[in-house]
Length: 243
Image 1 (cartoon, helix red, strand yellow):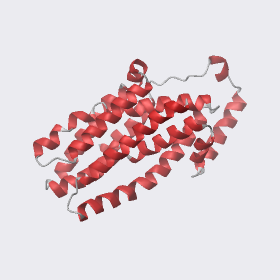
Image 2 (cartoon, rainbow, N blue to C red):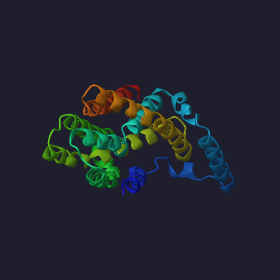
Image 3 (spheres, rainbow, N blue to C red):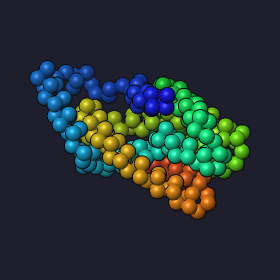
Image 4 (cartoon, one colour):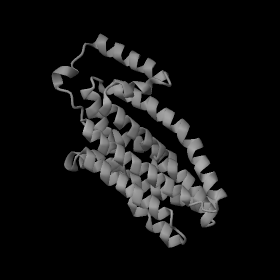
């Protein structure tokens, strides 16, 4: 269920975010469109294609760095390591951890589904702030959980986290357009960035978890996640200075 919800999360994060280019700029010939699609596919096959994001102006570069941190702290990914923490600290078995992870993943969906509308109402930066702050609070509380009811009490904070992803996606689309990148080209670069981020994320959190367990404080992992999300929010705030 968690895997299916993760895929749904990616789809819903982009739902409701409109194309910002004028209509006249979208009208390309069929041949040009086909060529662009083929070029984007070739670029997406290049594992280093994401580096182009850092060569199209400071604002897109800063937002791309924030996107990388968002990949590293993707809630369902972090939740997998959170389940290991629960086994260490609460003694939960695989069935209990699975039920909790599925419930937490399900609570992420409403925020993702409404993320585009929320970004339109409170602004992309506002939506991002709401999502990031709720994730930071949840992780900080996770770092202090000692009892079952305390762990369950962290679940509601998963609800607004999808707004952060939608807000950042909207900011990236806007910055990409200003940098002269089409939505398809930008998407291929971001897919490459996500792949690179996932390659880093698994060994990173494995190392952090192992170090936390080694020091007798498994829940310290959540404090590290909170710090990374805070850094992401700070980077996005910095990007507003380069706008």
